[in-house]
Image (cartoon, rainbow, N blue to C red; front, side, top):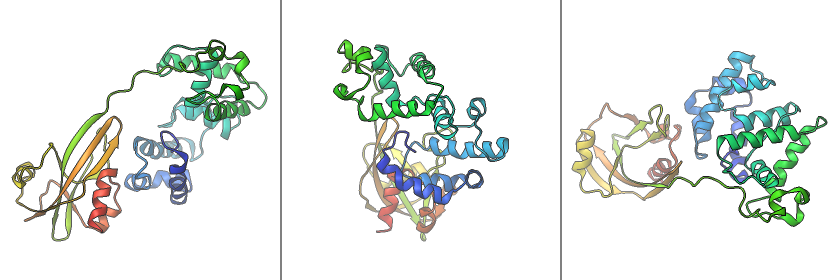
Length: 304
């Protein structure tokens, strides 16, 4: 949960998650929709899917017990080099490096690495160095120390005066700490404009579930069109093949995910019958389903 999410945001989610899924077995047996609902609001839902898949693999292949061997951990979906290192180091007290963004920053400055640290071969080089430098006695203390050093001292703005490594730090000696680490340029954010149709008929609302392989896989949303302006109800009728009666516009919502920023313009419409192209749910039923964040806020407007 802490990957790409702040601690203050994570705490209530973590507590709810542990109450809902107190064991690996309980997580493995849970329906995916329940898992995603419990994760709803944290974003990057592949993390939740991997936790679910990983729990199932652990139950099927390792008797429900988290394995403590590097090769076995690598077989579990969602466990990459950092998570594997963190588990081996902190949970099993083995000699293993947990190299997160903080540690990458510390090591790249310490070694004077001027290459872009998000390149795979550079990450691998820094990972190898971290593993080689660990002592045989209580190596997990050094791992924790590197993480804390990056979080508290060697941050984006380096506090070199208080750093215990500054005398041996290549970036400090050459006054490069403001230039290291280097990263590849971020991809440009893509703006999306969507006209959302909140279609209801006899107390039920039309929703659609994201398809596998898509960004919003397994999450529910209201139907929408990719267009800048709502012209007339006929556009919606043509798109979804059913007669509709326009009622009113709802409050605009913003929705950010990966490299996209979507603006959602929802419109309340009444249908003259059901369409088999959608699932039809009551408000109470929709509250139990995992929705993408922007569409969840649209749903909230229906309950005010």
